[in-house]
Amino acid sequence: MSVSPLLHARPTERPRSGGQPSFTALLRAAEGVSKADVERAVAFSVERGCSLPLATLSLRIVPAEGLPPLLVRHYGMRWIDPRSHAPDPRLIDQAGLDLCLRHGLLPWRQSGNVTVILAPLPEIYEAHREHLAECFGPVVCALADQDAIQTALLEVRGPTLAAQAQSALTDTYSCRTWNTAAVRQPVILGLLALLGATILWPATVLAVASIWGILSLLACVGLKLAAAIAAFRDVPRPPVATVAHWPTVSVIVALYREADIAERLILRLSRLDYPRDKLEILLAVEERDHLTREALARAALPDWMRVIVTPHGKLKTKPRALNHALRFCRGSIVGIFDAEDAPAPDQIRRIAERFHSAGPDLACLQGILDYYNPRTNWIARCFTVEYATLFRVILPGLQRMGMAIPLGGTTLYVQRDVLAKIGAWDAHNVTEDADLGIRIARHGYRTEVIPTVTQEEANCLPLAWVKQRSRWQKGYMMTWIVHMRDPRRLWAEIGPRGFAGFQIMFFGALSQAILAPVLWSYWLLALGLPHPVTDSLPGWSVIALVALFLLTEAVNITIGILALRRTDHRMNPLWVPTLIFYFPMLTFSVYKALWEMVRRPFYWDKTTHGHFG
Image 1 (cartoon, helix red, strand yellow):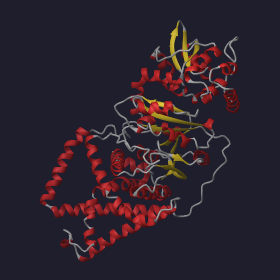
Image 2 (cartoon, one colour):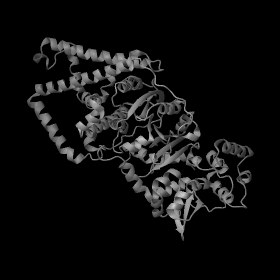
Image 3 (cartoon, rainbow, N blue to C red):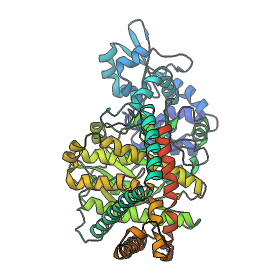
Image 4 (cartoon, rainbow, N blue to C red):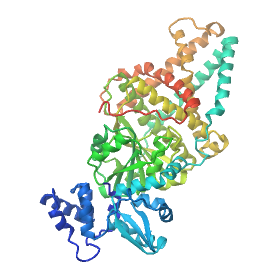
């Protein structure tokens, strides 16, 4: 039974009418409830300023099946199971679906001119009774299990909720209009034309591909170098103001087929030291993901965690689940975690302090991602160096240069009102994080990288790595296409510097991965071996190409070592040069991404967690 929304309702200690026994007496007489349990519930109710029944619910002192009789006797109210006795959908629409979802209310049925409102406790009903009376006239409260209320809402309004979660973002910024059938024929014709040109004019095709690949390499390394210089430049730290009243923070964790990670997730998130009455963790799980739902039902969820069931739909993506869970959030700040995350205990306090100190243009804070299994194998080591470079050098540098930041998919916190203004997440984009970062910038808001670390699990199995990276690259392709629908508008909204950075981070990086085999061939020159272009190039240009490739590798290695020093890992820096053998896996993944752009553009290739911690 999940009850955290009730912590914000008005306490009601007394029964609704005279003659009912006190809840304390009922608890003492209840089977399986010890004196210590009763004392613990009383202390909790005093500490939180909530009712004793709510404290009992939160602490799970009484088994779920034994609680309804106690509540019925105490309040003298009727208990109704809306799963067995379905509600009237018209009443839900009349009250407002968002009100019902966010506060756990269910306008059930009308009896004469009186509307019966179901609520887990009278507190929540009393908090909204005036509004409900305005909607329906005379109203009366009956009790129901909150999970049963959510289930009933899904049963009668599931398709509506699923459609709304998929279409939260307007067509202007969404990739859902991508038509695979329309692009399939042009792609096939383009590939045939490329094959024909390669057969007829191989030298010309190689030259064009080489120039394109070298320019993208120069652009990417140049941006990385500029970001590194900016990141290592000393700048004053932003002031931190004292927070008198901590804001409510809602954190969404999207779970899908994570049955074996539930207990560890609860343990890791329980280390957060943010005030519990100002924190809610929403565990978003798919309606038909029965294994994860059963695992969460068995887990001892604390009162500040609750399960949000995402209604079934053909589209199963993380951003769709986030859009649905957002409707349940009470916080003014919304954070995102992944299933395997282990955030720093003081992270949310630091987030709240920074938002409190900053101006209204700061919409998003991106934390630093790191790994707790960097020594699992070579791929894990390389992934650790790559993430250290991205989150400790590149993203902070981009921020200081005033460029749009492609966000990471976790440890990001966004102002709730900004999410509402920009349309939340694109449910069809498989890199919803990067897309969100660009849209935040396009709407005139800022993102900052904040030095708080979340440890997660490095995906270090070769096949799983390629699948995960291909999803990211597919999303980058889709994000670039969406935001380049109107290049002039994009230029006007993020400025020339931001526009150039966007092209390099998305189009340039993808081009580099696609054309990597062409660039690899030039290492033959560094080894003194013949190359097809040698005869057509002057001698100095061959030397220049070799020097260019060596210089770019030197820049990458240097930045990687400097980034690694900013972490707590005691990793030998000699692992950094081995990334030259790690990045070729990007080419396999990018070709997979290109294939899926034509065949399965919205398919979310699931990354399995929990193998190494």
